[in-house]
Length: 240
Figure 1 (cartoon, rainbow, N blue to C red):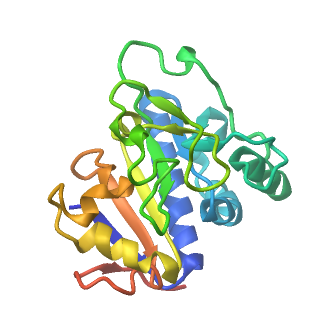
Figure 2 (tube, rainbow, N blue to C red; figure 1 turned 135 degrees about the vertical axis):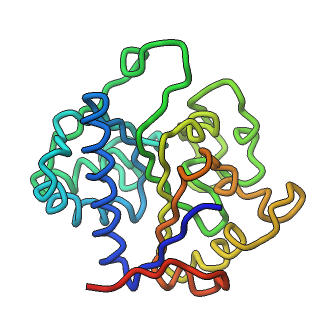
């Protein structure tokens, strides 16, 4: 069962998220000389823009110049479009002075060898319908077993044209942090974390429930609003 941590507000959650990222970075850099990170958009952009700069200053071992950063999904729109994840990160990171700490590399040279790439850490969100990345309930891309990145032209959520990491790539990650905030996420969080796990159960149709990187490698970070419908004992985190 995945670990679940609940924070009083997005402020405490964001600080914890940034700390976990920098700790993972320091560990990966010490182990292999680099840190591979997958980012998602949405509320994660604001959380990281606010909390990552001070966390990096407090963790010199994180060495952001050694990071390789990819995006877990992207909407195929110009970078200046408000739906662009790349554009959102570029905008907020420029404003915080963190611009170009991200080294985005593409192609097989980023992960040499024939094996499925293993990111050190993926940061994922979840939508009220249970989607994560651009993997939506009932979509054919959920059945993909070979391609590591999929293209879709029929996203049920605008804009329709997107690219997304697929489940084989997500589930190969060394660690995954799933982040959810706000009361609108509470019903789906209850389904994801407390509903029966049989394939025919409602939970089994939710893409976020199919992210299963292995024992001890998945952790949920929630604020109290997102966790309000949960009944299970939770690891509640203190406020400031």
